[in-house]
Length: 244
Ligand code: PXP
Image 1: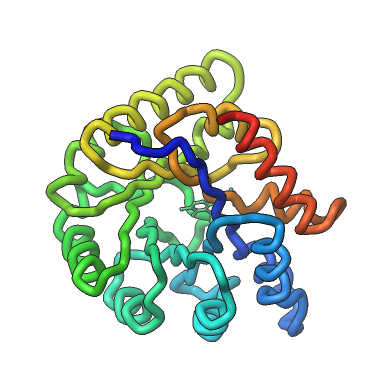
Image 2: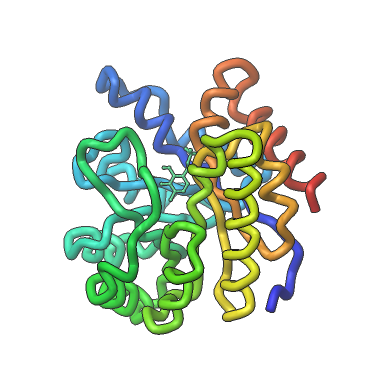
């Protein structure tokens, strides 16, 4: 199904807001960061409005919407509150993620088999207003089989397990991502990937030709401490380009 070999980068800016919220200062300014990230060549800005508002705030979502020049990928839980906000903000893309208050970060994909009705309702409601929905799921064939019934045009495969393993186990995880990507692509679903990707492992995932977008945050913001966000973005784009 894949028509293009282009691989896009969505930069997750939650981690910049994390630093700001640690002291409730106006800095670091996420809009200034977005300008630099976009000028460095990123294709999209990803942000997660969590139920507990631990990093991105409601006002940020509206300010980013007005400010950005590329594409907004809003990550959110499958709740009525978030659907209402998304319909008001109108991001180009929404990535529906599972959310638990006590977790450090999103720890795994949505179980769309267990939550089929809710996820289908949220997806259709966003589809109806023209927002592209992506479902953040594990690289699991049984989950992917249900995507056509849910009606989401895209999925984002959770790469966190792959990123957190080593050796033979990591190769098994990598092959799960390859198989899931090929299967989803054969069903006409756009495949994105993200979580735990860094300057060492992104190359391998970027080599999977059907993957269309990577969403990366933590490693890039950590790298920016040493080289700045512009160089951190360019370095990641360079890794992705070399893999294609
Ligand atoms: N994709 C999704 C759906 C996520 O929830 C996150 C983390 O916020 C990312 C990508 C980026 O993960 P990381 O910060 O580990 O690069």
